[in-house]
Length: 213
Ligand SMILES: *[C@@H]1O[C@H](CO)[C@@H](O)[C@H](O)[C@H]1NC(C)=O
Ligand SMILES: *[C@@H]1O[C@H](CO)[C@@H](O)[C@H](O)[C@H]1NC(C)=O
Ligand SMILES: *[C@@H]1O[C@H](CO)[C@@H](O)[C@H](O)[C@H]1NC(C)=O
Ligand SMILES: *[C@@H]1O[C@H](CO)[C@@H](O)[C@H](O)[C@H]1NC(C)=O
Ligand SMILES: *[C@@H]1O[C@H](CO)[C@@H](O)[C@H](O)[C@H]1NC(C)=O
Image (cartoon, rainbow, N blue to C red; front, top):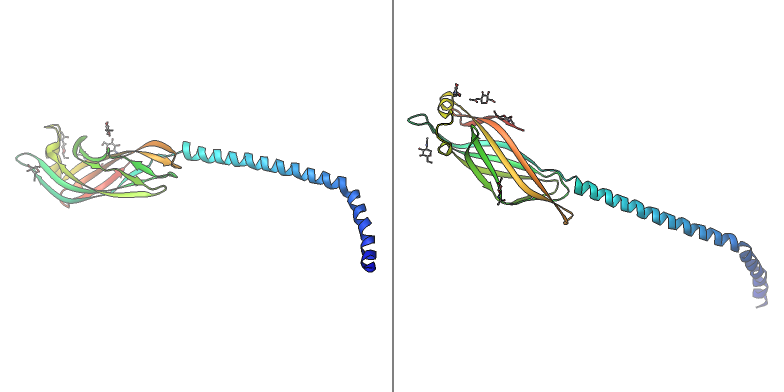
């Protein structure tokens, strides 16, 4: 007991003495640390808000139109006659891709279509049902289209001459209307379209010179 008392006694005053000596600087440091921490929290909060606003601005205001492309056109069947009246019937298989560059899915309705034209007049049209291109994804679709020269307006073309030359120039038009869904809150209407020119080679039943803008 005496040993413990004699041991604890020299320590106790020293401890009290030290504490009373360091009290003010310690509190000051603590207060300083607290205001520093407070400042850091506020600063971090501002940075966080700015980052959120920036991300929103980038995502919402810069949503881009999807990119529609005609990848290929294959001739599945082809029948034509030059006389008595020029006539051309074909079944074409077009592969169309729709690339969505946005950070949200592109959902398109069912009022979309792809068409083939000759001399600016419609030879065939195919309705494309509703669908979705995933965010940063590419949707690929194969469209089978019946092309009939009987749909052309009477006498306003040079089909007879083209059938004789063996090359029929066609163009294709495709348009999508839909919405880019961002963060499940924002929906931005975006239209994507495509124009292509190509030449149908009658002898080989192939498409050549497919050019799109
Ligand atoms: C093309 O199809 C139409 C009917 O859709 C037919 O009357 C015509 O004879 C066909 N032409 C050829 C060359 O087969
Ligand atoms: C479908 O799209 C066409 C143009 O591609 C437009 O003229 C027509 O009004 C649209 N129909 C509906 C029901 O939205
Ligand atoms: C019709 O097409 C043929 C072959 O492509 C061409 O030689 C001719 O000049 C064309 N005629 C007209 C009126 O465009
Ligand atoms: C068809 O297209 C090709 C390539 O663009 C062009 O050289 C040619 O003159 C066109 N033919 C007709 C009849 O328009
Ligand atoms: C397709 O042809 C038309 C008329 O010949 C031309 O105005 C258009 O620029 C062409 N488009 C492409 C993508 O070559």
